[in-house]
Image (cartoon, rainbow, N blue to C red; front, top):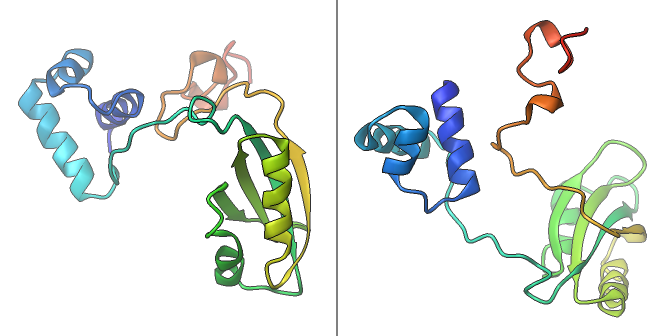
Length: 166
């Protein structure tokens, strides 16, 4: 992947329905050249698919939480996945290093729905407890492949900060 591929991916992340013509104008390539690059990115597995981005709050699930999941002993990742994957409220699950066995991102209609979901999760075999942080507000969510802003310091020479200092 080169810088143009990265820009194409970022543009598609912003709007997967963007035309090859529009992308080409933004990266200084013809529409057929963009199509060839997108086809290659798909065949290489960089672009895994396309999906509609849904606002969970507008869909009726505005409450969300980050949940630390604690399990008995050395519960394998596959068993942790099996314990939580069938709960539609669990939108992401990650095994982690540290005390917790996994971190879950949970969405719900309200706190009562969240509480019921946590009770169901705690009843799964091998789960000993959860520790929950309810999200009050989302400051930002950055999709992978999005172009970092200059203030983030990415892309500066020799690890320099955005002001040029090291």
